[in-house]
Image 1 (cartoon, rainbow, N blue to C red):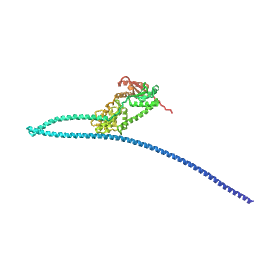
Image 2 (cartoon, helix red, strand yellow):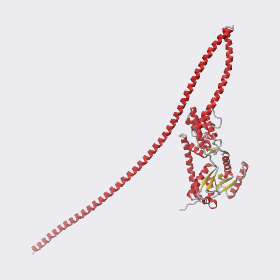
Image 3 (cartoon, rainbow, N blue to C red):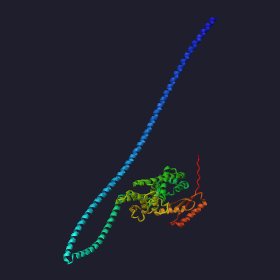
Length: 519
């Protein structure tokens, strides 16, 4: 019985081991299948990730290629522009060299012709001297034969006679040659100036005291005026000019004696009309933008003038002052164009005289530089200009040309004499000056200066050709009552110190502004 139990237990144990064995094998097989499935998924994800990375790499490479191509194209364009600029400069220099070569050839021909004439005159003088010697020998022999004088006495008498005659002939000869030399010098100077003026021609336009602006329709006049005139008042206050709106269809007139203010007002009003938004804050914004642009324009005008006469290395401040001369007139002649013309004329005269052309042009361009600030500094423009040029390191020739071109120029400084001649030629040629604006400008400046002398006045603008003065006063230093008194004081001062026909209207403007920002 025990054996049977042991047998059954052994069989059961064997069956258990067999079951465990097969269970383990089945479990291993299932685990292997899971591992293979997981490996396939990992491989599939890895392939997708590799493919994605490759696509990203391709895109990155293509972007880099495009960027490099754009950079290359930009560098190539810049390189071509520089080459074009250098080619233009080389062509300009080549033209100048060819011109100088032509001048040299003309001078050589003139020198050769002069030498031939001198040789011919020398041969003629030698021939005459020989003839005179023969005549003197014959005269001595004749006198010796006819007179009973000894040879020594005859020679002494003959010499005294010849000496007296020669003194008379010498005085007549000197006088004749002096007159001939004076006539030739005057003719040569006239030919030199005429040739110089004929070689240079410039277009001059006279600045008026008003500018006309076209408007799309007459309804725009009402928008410019604004409700109760607030727009036109804001515009006139910001620019310091007078806006004239009359019955003339399609135009608005900007009037003012200061050409820079007038140009700023013209550009600002034109932009406001184009934009369509016309109100006080927009007006102030546009006027501020145009003022900045005007500073850039002034600098550019000075640089263009320097480039036109081939002058480089000038101080930036002097270039800016030259640009201001674009808006300065003298007897209606544009001072910047007058300076450029004087520079060209001075350079050509210097060439004719064998002097430094570039130095003469520099002297001519800068001779009226004082007119750019003569309304800000006391003294005449020659002295102001000389002080400016000395401050910015110009040479002694340039400084003296600016200082002495209106006075009697010193003979020991030829460039001052050249500039004085070129300045006179430019100012006195036909069509250079049509009428005088000097007195008009001085009158406007004096009106404004009288108003700004009083305490509390911030700005003053003379408008309507001096028939009205608009005075802006500080709201902190004045009240409504003191503003009225200030207006009466200005009128009283004008009546005492200023002579004027008719009447002058004085308007004192006092306002307080409060500004907040909504967020």
